Length: 210
Ligand SMILES: Cc1cc2nc3c(=O)[nH]c(=O)nc-3n(C[C@H](O)[C@H](O)[C@H](O)COP(=O)(O)O)c2cc1C
Image (cartoon, rainbow, N blue to C red; front, top):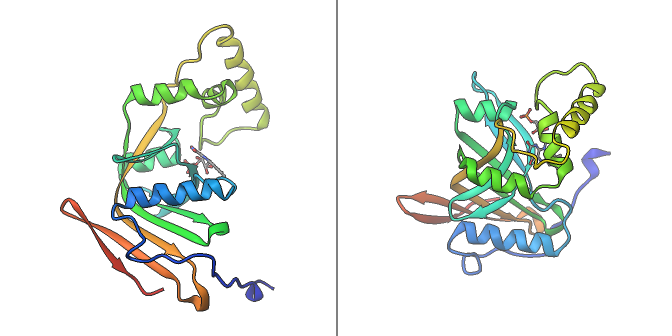
């Protein structure tokens, strides 16, 4: 029964003295540990956006870069998420690494990265993924599966023997964070929760009740 599924978390703890004072550094550290622990899809994050009437919508995307500027992911700018960010730049992100009993929640604003940076990343992708970006009008209703396969073959033909250009509607967004919460599962449901709030130019850390 669903209601009988229960985990007692007791692998790690998170304290004010052990946490990095900069949340990007802390996220980098936890990501490295998730990779080391062989978490499946350690860079997968649930991204929530807001549509034009204020309804939230969530889906998984992959984190492709993390630096002092923020968190970068790539997508189709004409997709639902792309259009939603266009009309409302406020987003939130959640990472969940069950193997480490950890969650990270982030709030911030998303903006397109430069075309040059998107191109550089696009060119580093495998050819199949490059063709896939051309072949899929992401988030549009399509007639059937054949539409995609046919589109893929068409672009394969079109780019035969040539470098595959980045589609104009494809690129990266950078999420500039203003809030983080690091959650470490502990026993007896008394989990550790440390939040970072951006105040002026520095990060204020608070402990939250679980
Ligand atoms: C593990 C995983 C990774 C994904 N990574 C991406 C990604 O990096 N970029 C992307 O556009 N969609 C990615 N997707 C697909 C999205 O979840 C979503 O289906 C798609 O982007 C369309 O979303 P939208 O219609 O809300 O724009 C991923 C899905 C999964 C399950």
